[in-house]
Length: 63
Image (cartoon, rainbow, N blue to C red; front, side, top):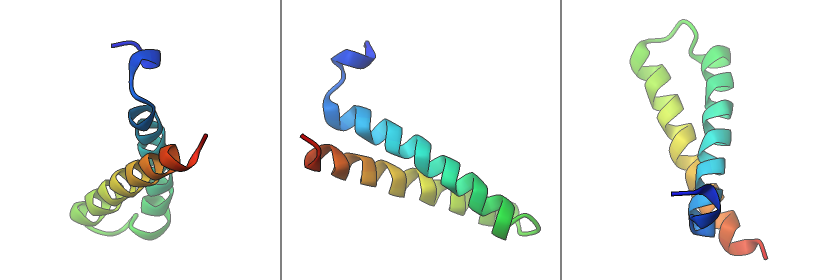
């Protein structure tokens, strides 16, 4: 499926998930560098889910 054929909510959610993972990666290096692998996975998964949710929310608010 082409990018332009995807629904607007899906495109925004994908972009939001990417941004959330980028923020999660920075948080992992800052706060969980010496932590366990589970800590790192939880931070990255949280970034993915929260970023995707924010992206989906922004798709509804954007014109």
